[in-house]
Image 1 (cartoon, rainbow, N blue to C red):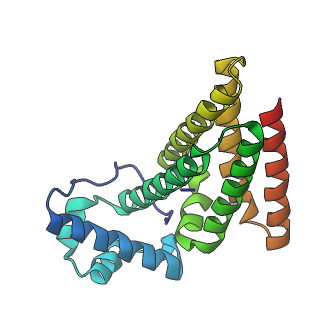
Image 2: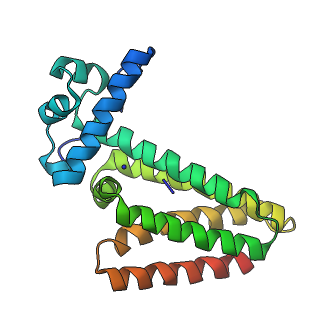
Amino acid sequence: MGNEIAGELHMPAARRSPSQSRSRERVERILAAAAALIAEAGSDAMRMSDVAARAKVSIGSLYQYFPDKGAVIRTLAERCNAQGRECIEEGLAGVRDIAGLKKAFSELVDTYYGMFLAEPVMRDIWSGTQADKELRDIDLADSRANGALLAEVLSRLRPDADPGELAHSAFLVMHLGEATMRLAISVDRAEGDALVEAYKRMALREFES
């Protein structure tokens, strides 16, 4: 469902939007290089000069697209969120009843948890979310968007329910899911697995109310 946190993150994401294929390819190299460096040593150790060297671009070229390290981080975070939202859309697309929703949602949680466990860049970014306002804003916007996807399904399955209540419940379920993943990867694996299972039980009960 939804790839570093260090220093001040005050600037917007990418400074210049790549319009030509050559520029897009350069941006992809930059982001791939940053992700590789984060995976190897974490975001705290990543420097813009290292990113430029790994991506084989000049430092000036790097700053044309990303004004600072924080912009690289936020772009990677937004990509993670976009991937996660696509996963949610696909997972909920075939839901036709509450039983189907519970099954699909449970599978989505397992998939998302697996992504957190397997992807060091995602873990690095979101482990520092609460310490950085701009990443918190990205996280909140992602939870709202994912909540809207869930609320749309709930509204279809429970047409007599209050739309506002469904929207609030769906938003909360999705936001708590993000928090659960961050907590789960901060403890040992057995406890993390148990926390994810507890979250699933709580969320699935909400769908029945």
